Length: 336
Image (cartoon, rainbow, N blue to C red; front, side, top):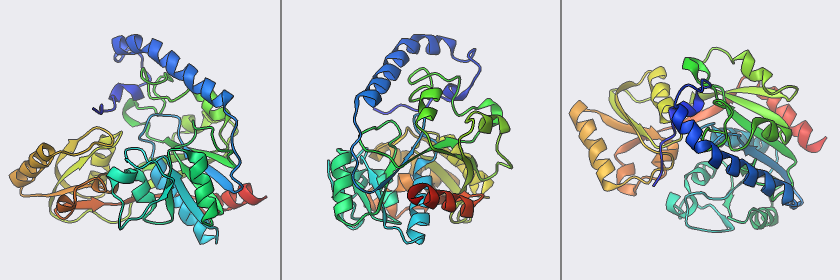
């Protein structure tokens, strides 16, 4: 069973959900201690190639995968054989295995590796060291690790964290700073930033500028601004949207901002495995409004083949405000 992300996680005002915060606090101390101990005690392995970690400091919803896809695109455009490496969360295969879009499904390798494989070679491996050696043997010059900031098994050339830049309506990406499950943090902010080389703040398409207070939170670390932009406009006509990601409410607003005639929206828990009853409910909503169904690329990759034919996939991409500057930073950092 998967749980929906609590909205109060992202509120800095501790007066919101005080009982939940208090009850979960002891568990968060244990979580933080176990994470810190694992990182300190692990000796990273050097796979012999460049390793770029794309991670975050919070539990889901920051936009790691779109940023990872853009990093892969920029490196490959520069002539670097960059390949993705993921644990394959949600998939049954242990790997190492190269993702084959003609064979593998989300049930095999997870939804995020399928998205990464749309643009570049992608591998999944529960054992990241074994996965890194397999990719390097296959010719990878650089490995882009998806969701690896708290995984210390590989020696990293560059550690990049993605931060959700949304601060409107009282939201703050780190909440009150509490560690999961009493807050959204995977580890304390100071500890996570100590292992960070560069920060990417990912803004929604309609955000005019980044919050200066958020930039100040990263001290002297280099900060680049990117925006989650539609890769294609929403189709015309009434639409019923749905999403099973960490922050589904952001998909709803993104569709509205992009000009979609969104007549209804249904949130699901992150990485949801959609069941027949879910499809029946969604189709009933669509029939009620004489609308078509639309969802994210990530959710669409988890749909059964027969439902993929009936549901629209809406792609988004991470676009850097200073793409040339970010690309130069990448190459200088990796081969200076």
